[in-house]
Image (tube, rainbow, N blue to C red; front, side, top):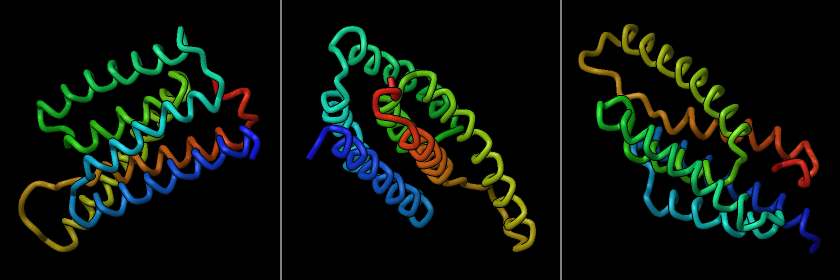
Length: 160
């Protein structure tokens, strides 16, 4: 198998993991630590298959993940996001160039806003009490899949 095919298989595996994250977050409002760990551990395999250099490429990916973890842990601390969502975003940051990840965040914000609006409408129709618990993992997964779809339309040489 050539490296480009292997890279596409890795992207496919990531997409499947994101679907699992979305479904479990929707059903149980929980994203498994094992799933997030699997996504994170797949990134170094992807880096090697993609021909990334240790410096600055791989270290840059780790740096991006640290920045994302720090920012979104702050959102977790104020109750704006779940811990599984933070870990999922951090694991995804290991897979994408920072500009691509920025696009993912924009798409995620739009998808999350639409999801929140739909949940608010549903709550009003059902006339239920209490706060809305938005399964933000769904928005993260949709934006991740959307981004993967965009990436895989390019040559693997233009990912980084």
